[in-house]
Amino acid sequence: MLPVVNHDARGSRLERALRGRVRGEVRFDAKSRLLYSTDASIYQILPIGVVVPLDAADAEAAIRVAAEEGVPVLPRGGGTGLAGQTVGAALVLDFSKRMNRILEIDPDRRRARVQPGVRLDRLNRAAAPHGLQFGPDPATIRQCVLGGMIGNNSCGARSLVYGKTGDHVHGLHCILADGGCTHFGPVQRADIPTLPGREGDLARQVMSLLEPERERILARYPKVPRRVSGYNFDTLLEAPELNLAQLLVGSEGTLATVVEAELGLVPVPAHRGLVLLAFSGRFDSMDAIAAILPEPGLSALEIVDDRVLRGARELLEYRDTAALVSPDARGVLFVEFSGDSAEEVAGLAHDFAARAPGLPGSPTPGVYLDKLAQFNAWALRQAATGLLYRTTAHRDIKPTEFVEDTGIPPEKLGA
Ligand SMILES: Cc1cc2nc3c(=O)[nH]c(=O)nc-3n(C[C@H](O)[C@H](O)[C@H](O)COP(=O)(O)OP(=O)(O)OC[C@H]3O[C@@H](n4cnc5c(N)ncnc54)[C@H](O)[C@@H]3O)c2cc1C
Image (cartoon, rainbow, N blue to C red; front, side, top):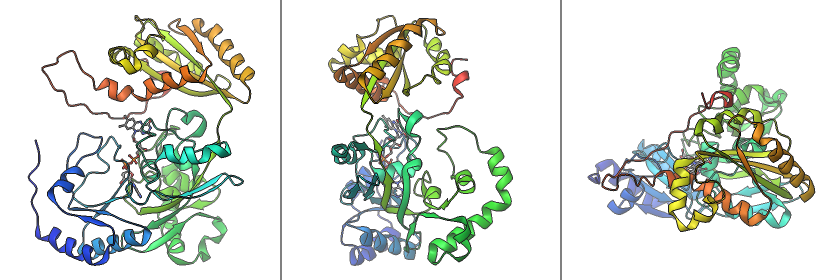
């Protein structure tokens, strides 16, 4: 059901003020507000209005106006967040449309400077001629943008090797809630007392709040490599240098708006090989995971179950790839190895495949070393969420699909 679009007095005042001071699009019409009222989640909340900033100065102007009017701001990237992060009764700032320039790629330092609306696949294409890429690779690589990845602290199938987005963020140019512009980057801890400007004031304030709670924070933050919930207080306390950019990573736009990011790049692995393990039981495939994690050269370990495979078999696009595993398979593990030479990767993959039948659930392995087969297999894995949504068992019922990510220790997955 579509929500009723009211134009309230607060919205009218805000719109007038924005039109006077912002050069980019200012959209308060019903259609725009409806369009921006949803994202990839199940939630729908009408924004007060939408601004499409042309550059950092434009975003700064919009945030200043919002602060003067007492209206919250909500930065938005690709809108692929699954938990409603980009919907809210706020002034939405869409960075994906105009602030999407790659400002610099420095192959020697393995760094990139980007505006927040740069799509991840575009950054990777630009870095590829230098043999580089951005490490984290969410399944939404063709839709998500770097600002949104920073907001969510996104990670992907290769998080075993590359960790989370925050592990690759060196510095951020941000606009704070009052419209002030600040840069956050690494700071020697000894320099904090004399650090000038907003960054210095904030560094001292944040650390004076965190230090008294140091013991409790470090004891109680879950020791899960892919933890992306909550503010990164543990990183601020533990890292050798202080970098307030790390506080913004994963903060879902609640602390500041990123208008430029300095990011680290990683070498594109020279060679990759994939082993698909087909299990006759869905939970068996989960039981095997803990035993596979210590494998040398492992760069990705992902799972799909028979519901995804069933959906894949129904679609021409994925049918051939789904046929790589037996129709009886109830669970499939994608086990990827990376290395510097084709021989090394082939050795790792074949050695693992030879031992795989001894894993819990006695899976049947298949080794894929050519690029096209691997590309197709990963395309199926990346489509898994969409394929899960294809609930065709009861065609007269339209289910409401949603995804909630949870974290479970690998050794307890099948339990
Ligand atoms: C099918 C599917 C598969 C997915 N797979 C993965 C996966 O493998 N790994 C993973 O981590 N996630 C995954 N996701 C979730 C999501 O796609 C990623 O987290 C993605 O990186 C979010 O990027 P985005 O540009 O869409 O961000 P958005 O959804 O637009 O925004 C995400 C958050 O960042 C904030 N934000 C946006 N821009 C800025 C800015 N300029 N300054 C400050 N904050 C900002 C927003 O306010 C919001 O809180 C998946 C989602 C779907 C639908």
